[in-house]
Amino acid sequence: MNVHQALPAKRSRALEPLGEFAADVVAGLTAKPKSLPPKYFYDLTGSSLFDRITLLPEYYPTRSELSLLEKHAAEMASLLPAGAALIEFGSGSSRKARILLGVAANIECYVPIDISGDFLREDAAKLRRDLPNLAIYPVAGDFTVMSELSAGIAASRAGFFPGSTIGNFEPHEAASFLRRAGEMLGRGAILLVGVDLAKSPDVLYRAYNDAEGVTAKFNLNLLVRINRELGGNFNLTNFEHHAFYNADKSRIEMHLASTKRQKVRIGDLTVDFRAGETIHTENSYKYSIESFRALAQGSGWVPVQVWTDGLFSVHALRNAAD
Ligand code: AVJ
Image 1: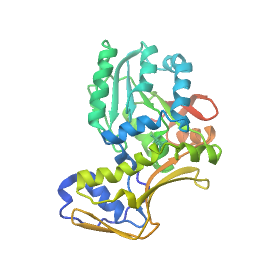
Image 2: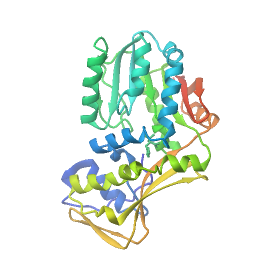
Image 3: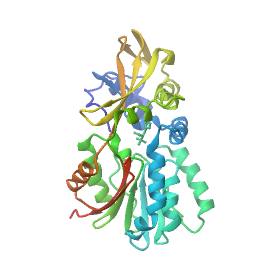
Image 4: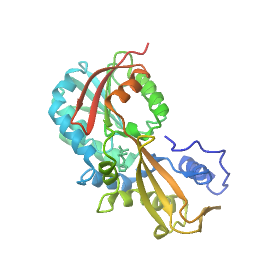
């Protein structure tokens, strides 16, 4: 889910022991143009900031999807096999899954997968309290690279990928994710995917540039995280949140723009920024119902049903891959 193909990374002896995050930061900030994968937004602070974004008047996707789930949960659940394990990719707070779990007696266990381990465990504990009869197996991990689930999880599986997080992938990466999800879920499995729809640039612009500035905080939090975890010295007042709609690519782009010429140190790495130079931090692709169905069909899935309010869509797909 990289916004750019990274060039072979400059090495940083001091940062090497700090693992994947450090390696991706070095690769992204020494690449031309600079970029950072959006999965690193979601430390504990970032996950909470995203939760606040979902409540903003300008950020319609979550409200749209929640009302589609509330209205059509029974239809969606009726597509799931008896005794199914519901696998959720990038669960965050399981607010959406609760709607499905609340009506689907045929779901035997719930498997939330999320990169933010602390947030995931906290949320699973709450869910266990509220749904004591449901088996819950939280998996702390990066679903963008995951290729299999532990064998202990029930054979009949169904997938749930809400929120239009599929929009963070480049279309070719979205296709390979759908293929891998097909392998994880098995032949004939159902996958429910939330997909934000292309629409007027004004509405999209406002959704990523809210008046309260929460999205800006969410974006800048990436620099706070690098300072805290990798010993960076980013001065946040020298960076600005930029989000705009790239109509040619049908995507929202988020960037952090350097307001002046400056040097930033991260461990033993020095990164130069020109005035106005940006770090590309996220793409959020917007589809039409037809273009997403074509992507799914090209990845071994058969469109079964779609629910939409014109702004957002939830697709039910069946795995036809051999
Ligand atoms: C969680 C990836 C679906 O792209 O709309 C919200 C993240 N970024 N505001 C999106 C996000 C800025 C969100 N996804």
